[in-house]
Length: 278
Image (cartoon, rainbow, N blue to C red; front, side, top):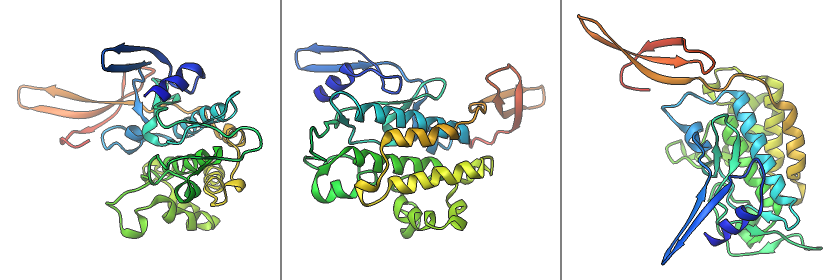
Protein backbone atom coordinates (compact mmCIF):
# COMPACT_ATOMS: atom_id res chain seq x y z
CA UNK A 1 0.00 0.00 0.00
CA UNK A 2 2.84 2.38 0.74
CA UNK A 3 4.23 2.03 -2.77
CA UNK A 4 0.85 2.65 -4.35
CA UNK A 5 0.22 5.72 -2.23
CA UNK A 6 3.70 7.06 -2.93
CA UNK A 7 3.23 6.88 -6.70
CA UNK A 8 -0.38 8.08 -6.89
CA UNK A 9 0.37 10.89 -4.43
CA UNK A 10 3.28 12.27 -6.45
CA UNK A 11 1.84 11.90 -9.95
CA UNK A 12 -1.23 13.80 -11.13
CA UNK A 13 -3.01 13.19 -14.43
CA UNK A 14 -6.67 13.18 -15.61
CA UNK A 15 -6.41 9.43 -16.29
CA UNK A 16 -5.04 8.48 -12.86
CA UNK A 17 -7.34 8.14 -9.85
CA UNK A 18 -6.64 10.99 -7.41
CA UNK A 19 -5.30 10.26 -3.95
CA UNK A 20 -7.35 12.52 -1.66
CA UNK A 21 -5.85 11.62 1.69
CA UNK A 22 -4.77 8.88 4.05
CA UNK A 23 -5.28 7.63 7.58
CA UNK A 24 -2.43 6.32 9.73
CA UNK A 25 -3.52 5.33 13.21
CA UNK A 26 -2.00 2.57 15.33
CA UNK A 27 -1.74 -0.46 13.05
CA UNK A 28 -4.29 0.87 10.56
CA UNK A 29 -3.22 2.25 7.17
CA UNK A 30 -5.88 3.56 4.79
CA UNK A 31 -5.56 5.42 1.48
CA UNK A 32 -8.52 7.55 0.39
CA UNK A 33 -9.10 7.98 -3.34
CA UNK A 34 -11.67 9.92 -5.33
CA UNK A 35 -14.99 8.15 -5.81
CA UNK A 36 -15.48 6.54 -9.23
CA UNK A 37 -19.25 6.00 -9.53
CA UNK A 38 -19.26 3.71 -12.58
CA UNK A 39 -16.94 1.19 -10.99
CA UNK A 40 -14.42 -0.84 -12.95
CA UNK A 41 -14.23 -1.56 -16.67
CA UNK A 42 -14.38 -5.24 -15.74
CA UNK A 43 -17.80 -4.83 -14.11
CA UNK A 44 -19.17 -2.73 -16.97
CA UNK A 45 -17.80 -4.89 -19.79
CA UNK A 46 -18.74 -8.31 -18.46
CA UNK A 47 -21.89 -7.50 -16.48
CA UNK A 48 -25.09 -9.39 -17.28
CA UNK A 49 -27.13 -6.62 -15.70
CA UNK A 50 -25.75 -3.40 -17.21
CA UNK A 51 -26.29 -2.47 -20.84
CA UNK A 52 -23.47 -3.49 -23.20
CA UNK A 53 -20.88 -0.75 -23.66
CA UNK A 54 -21.23 0.77 -27.15
CA UNK A 55 -18.26 1.01 -29.50
CA UNK A 56 -17.65 4.70 -28.86
CA UNK A 57 -17.45 4.18 -25.10
CA UNK A 58 -15.07 1.24 -25.48
CA UNK A 59 -12.72 3.33 -27.60
CA UNK A 60 -13.00 6.22 -25.14
CA UNK A 61 -11.97 3.86 -22.34
CA UNK A 62 -9.07 2.48 -24.38
CA UNK A 63 -7.78 5.98 -25.17
CA UNK A 64 -8.07 7.19 -21.57
CA UNK A 65 -6.27 4.15 -20.20
CA UNK A 66 -3.57 4.50 -22.86
CA UNK A 67 -3.03 8.14 -21.89
CA UNK A 68 -2.65 7.13 -18.25
CA UNK A 69 -0.02 4.51 -19.09
CA UNK A 70 1.81 6.86 -21.47
CA UNK A 71 2.01 9.46 -18.70
CA UNK A 72 3.51 6.94 -16.26
CA UNK A 73 6.05 5.73 -18.81
CA UNK A 74 7.17 9.26 -19.69
CA UNK A 75 7.29 10.75 -16.19
CA UNK A 76 10.58 12.29 -15.00
CA UNK A 77 11.08 9.03 -13.14
CA UNK A 78 9.37 6.45 -15.38
CA UNK A 79 6.90 4.10 -13.73
CA UNK A 80 5.89 0.62 -14.90
CA UNK A 81 2.31 -0.09 -13.84
CA UNK A 82 2.83 -3.89 -13.83
CA UNK A 83 -0.79 -4.88 -13.12
CA UNK A 84 -2.76 -3.31 -15.97
CA UNK A 85 -6.15 -5.05 -16.28
CA UNK A 86 -9.84 -4.20 -16.58
CA UNK A 87 -10.47 -4.43 -12.83
CA UNK A 88 -7.86 -1.71 -12.21
CA UNK A 89 -9.38 0.75 -14.69
CA UNK A 90 -12.15 2.77 -13.02
CA UNK A 91 -14.80 4.95 -14.67
CA UNK A 92 -16.34 8.26 -13.65
CA UNK A 93 -19.90 9.28 -14.55
CA UNK A 94 -18.87 10.18 -18.11
CA UNK A 95 -16.97 6.92 -18.63
CA UNK A 96 -13.59 8.61 -18.41
CA UNK A 97 -11.04 5.90 -17.62
CA UNK A 98 -8.62 6.30 -14.71
CA UNK A 99 -5.94 3.88 -13.56
CA UNK A 100 -6.13 2.79 -9.92
CA UNK A 101 -4.31 0.45 -7.51
CA UNK A 102 -0.62 1.23 -7.87
CA UNK A 103 0.39 -1.39 -5.33
CA UNK A 104 2.51 -3.35 -7.83
CA UNK A 105 3.86 -0.33 -9.74
CA UNK A 106 7.63 -0.33 -10.17
CA UNK A 107 10.18 2.35 -10.98
CA UNK A 108 11.21 1.94 -14.60
CA UNK A 109 14.72 1.42 -15.98
CA UNK A 110 17.06 4.41 -16.01
CA UNK A 111 19.90 5.39 -18.31
CA UNK A 112 20.87 2.78 -20.88
CA UNK A 113 19.02 -0.04 -19.14
CA UNK A 114 16.15 -1.58 -21.11
CA UNK A 115 14.48 -3.34 -18.18
CA UNK A 116 14.49 -3.96 -14.46
CA UNK A 117 14.67 -7.41 -12.89
CA UNK A 118 12.07 -8.11 -10.26
CA UNK A 119 10.08 -10.86 -8.59
CA UNK A 120 7.24 -11.96 -10.85
CA UNK A 121 3.94 -10.46 -9.73
CA UNK A 122 0.76 -9.39 -11.46
CA UNK A 123 -2.18 -11.23 -12.98
CA UNK A 124 -1.89 -14.28 -15.21
CA UNK A 125 -3.57 -13.66 -18.55
CA UNK A 126 -2.34 -10.06 -18.64
CA UNK A 127 1.37 -10.42 -17.83
CA UNK A 128 3.84 -10.25 -20.73
CA UNK A 129 5.49 -13.57 -21.64
CA UNK A 130 9.06 -12.28 -21.24
CA UNK A 131 8.22 -11.06 -17.73
CA UNK A 132 6.77 -14.44 -16.75
CA UNK A 133 9.78 -16.33 -18.14
CA UNK A 134 12.66 -14.09 -17.03
CA UNK A 135 11.39 -11.54 -14.49
CA UNK A 136 12.56 -8.78 -16.84
CA UNK A 137 10.12 -5.88 -16.61
CA UNK A 138 9.97 -2.90 -18.97
CA UNK A 139 7.41 -0.35 -20.14
CA UNK A 140 6.75 -2.70 -23.08
CA UNK A 141 5.46 -5.22 -20.53
CA UNK A 142 2.63 -2.77 -19.83
CA UNK A 143 2.08 -2.47 -23.59
CA UNK A 144 1.44 -6.22 -23.78
CA UNK A 145 -1.09 -5.96 -20.93
CA UNK A 146 -2.74 -3.07 -22.75
CA UNK A 147 -3.08 -5.29 -25.82
CA UNK A 148 -4.93 -7.88 -23.73
CA UNK A 149 -7.32 -5.24 -22.36
CA UNK A 150 -7.91 -3.85 -25.85
CA UNK A 151 -8.76 -7.38 -27.00
CA UNK A 152 -11.25 -7.68 -24.12
CA UNK A 153 -12.91 -4.43 -25.23
CA UNK A 154 -13.12 -5.67 -28.83
CA UNK A 155 -14.33 -9.19 -28.10
CA UNK A 156 -16.29 -8.86 -24.87
CA UNK A 157 -14.33 -11.88 -23.62
CA UNK A 158 -12.28 -12.19 -20.44
CA UNK A 159 -8.52 -12.72 -20.65
CA UNK A 160 -9.06 -16.10 -19.02
CA UNK A 161 -12.45 -17.81 -19.01
CA UNK A 162 -12.65 -21.43 -17.82
CA UNK A 163 -16.33 -21.60 -18.79
CA UNK A 164 -15.45 -21.58 -22.50
CA UNK A 165 -14.22 -24.53 -24.61
CA UNK A 166 -10.59 -25.46 -23.91
CA UNK A 167 -9.22 -23.78 -27.05
CA UNK A 168 -11.00 -20.51 -26.23
CA UNK A 169 -10.22 -20.18 -22.52
CA UNK A 170 -7.08 -18.07 -23.03
CA UNK A 171 -8.11 -14.96 -24.95
CA UNK A 172 -4.77 -14.22 -26.61
CA UNK A 173 -4.22 -17.84 -27.67
CA UNK A 174 -7.67 -17.87 -29.26
CA UNK A 175 -7.57 -14.42 -30.87
CA UNK A 176 -4.02 -14.11 -32.24
CA UNK A 177 -4.47 -16.62 -35.10
CA UNK A 178 -7.66 -14.79 -36.14
CA UNK A 179 -5.95 -11.39 -35.97
CA UNK A 180 -3.39 -12.56 -38.52
CA UNK A 181 -6.05 -12.92 -41.23
CA UNK A 182 -8.08 -9.88 -42.24
CA UNK A 183 -10.96 -12.04 -43.48
CA UNK A 184 -11.34 -13.57 -40.02
CA UNK A 185 -11.10 -10.37 -37.97
CA UNK A 186 -14.84 -9.96 -37.59
CA UNK A 187 -15.01 -13.42 -36.02
CA UNK A 188 -13.67 -11.93 -32.79
CA UNK A 189 -16.08 -8.98 -32.46
CA UNK A 190 -18.30 -8.84 -29.38
CA UNK A 191 -21.78 -9.99 -30.54
CA UNK A 192 -23.33 -7.63 -27.98
CA UNK A 193 -22.28 -4.73 -30.21
CA UNK A 194 -24.93 -6.06 -32.62
CA UNK A 195 -22.96 -4.83 -35.62
CA UNK A 196 -23.10 -1.20 -34.46
CA UNK A 197 -19.46 -0.23 -35.01
CA UNK A 198 -17.33 1.18 -37.87
CA UNK A 199 -15.60 -1.76 -39.56
CA UNK A 200 -12.48 0.19 -40.58
CA UNK A 201 -12.00 1.47 -37.04
CA UNK A 202 -12.48 -2.05 -35.70
CA UNK A 203 -9.80 -3.35 -38.06
CA UNK A 204 -7.39 -0.62 -36.94
CA UNK A 205 -8.04 -1.31 -33.25
CA UNK A 206 -7.64 -5.06 -33.81
CA UNK A 207 -4.32 -4.56 -35.60
CA UNK A 208 -3.16 -2.29 -32.78
CA UNK A 209 -3.94 -5.05 -30.28
CA UNK A 210 -2.03 -7.51 -32.48
CA UNK A 211 1.10 -5.35 -32.46
CA UNK A 212 0.86 -4.81 -28.69
CA UNK A 213 0.83 -8.59 -28.21
CA UNK A 214 4.03 -9.22 -30.17
CA UNK A 215 6.15 -11.74 -28.27
CA UNK A 216 9.20 -9.60 -29.00
CA UNK A 217 8.92 -6.65 -26.57
CA UNK A 218 11.09 -4.42 -28.77
CA UNK A 219 8.60 -4.83 -31.62
CA UNK A 220 5.68 -3.51 -29.55
CA UNK A 221 4.65 0.13 -30.00
CA UNK A 222 5.28 2.77 -27.35
CA UNK A 223 2.27 3.94 -25.35
CA UNK A 224 2.55 7.43 -26.88
CA UNK A 225 2.20 5.83 -30.34
CA UNK A 226 -0.80 3.83 -29.14
CA UNK A 227 -2.46 7.07 -27.98
CA UNK A 228 -1.86 8.57 -31.43
CA UNK A 229 -3.39 5.48 -33.07
CA UNK A 230 -6.49 5.45 -30.87
CA UNK A 231 -7.25 9.16 -31.05
CA UNK A 232 -8.68 9.09 -34.63
CA UNK A 233 -10.95 6.18 -33.66
CA UNK A 234 -12.97 8.29 -31.23
CA UNK A 235 -16.61 8.88 -32.14
CA UNK A 236 -19.11 11.27 -30.60
CA UNK A 237 -21.91 8.80 -29.90
CA UNK A 238 -24.15 8.88 -26.82
CA UNK A 239 -23.03 7.04 -23.71
CA UNK A 240 -24.96 3.97 -22.54
CA UNK A 241 -28.48 4.85 -21.49
CA UNK A 242 -29.61 3.88 -18.03
CA UNK A 243 -31.79 0.86 -17.37
CA UNK A 244 -34.32 0.67 -14.60
CA UNK A 245 -37.27 -1.49 -13.61
CA UNK A 246 -40.65 0.23 -13.91
CA UNK A 247 -43.70 -1.36 -12.27
CA UNK A 248 -47.19 -0.35 -13.41
CA UNK A 249 -50.08 -1.43 -11.20
CA UNK A 250 -53.72 -1.66 -12.25
CA UNK A 251 -56.76 -3.04 -10.50
CA UNK A 252 -56.37 -6.30 -12.39
CA UNK A 253 -52.65 -6.93 -12.19
CA UNK A 254 -49.17 -5.51 -11.75
CA UNK A 255 -46.77 -5.35 -14.69
CA UNK A 256 -43.02 -4.72 -14.70
CA UNK A 257 -40.95 -3.47 -17.60
CA UNK A 258 -37.26 -2.97 -18.27
CA UNK A 259 -37.14 0.73 -19.16
CA UNK A 260 -34.23 2.38 -20.92
CA UNK A 261 -33.88 5.99 -19.87
CA UNK A 262 -32.04 8.50 -22.05
CA UNK A 263 -29.74 10.56 -19.82
CA UNK A 264 -30.59 13.69 -21.85
CA UNK A 265 -34.34 13.43 -21.23
CA UNK A 266 -36.92 12.09 -18.84
CA UNK A 267 -38.61 9.89 -21.42
CA UNK A 268 -38.51 6.13 -21.75
CA UNK A 269 -36.70 5.27 -24.95
CA UNK A 270 -38.01 1.72 -25.14
CA UNK A 271 -39.28 -1.01 -22.88
CA UNK A 272 -39.93 -4.73 -22.72
CA UNK A 273 -41.65 -7.02 -20.23
CA UNK A 274 -39.51 -7.79 -17.21
CA UNK A 275 -39.29 -11.47 -16.29
CA UNK A 276 -36.80 -11.15 -13.46
CA UNK A 277 -33.74 -11.62 -15.69
CA UNK A 278 -31.79 -8.58 -16.88
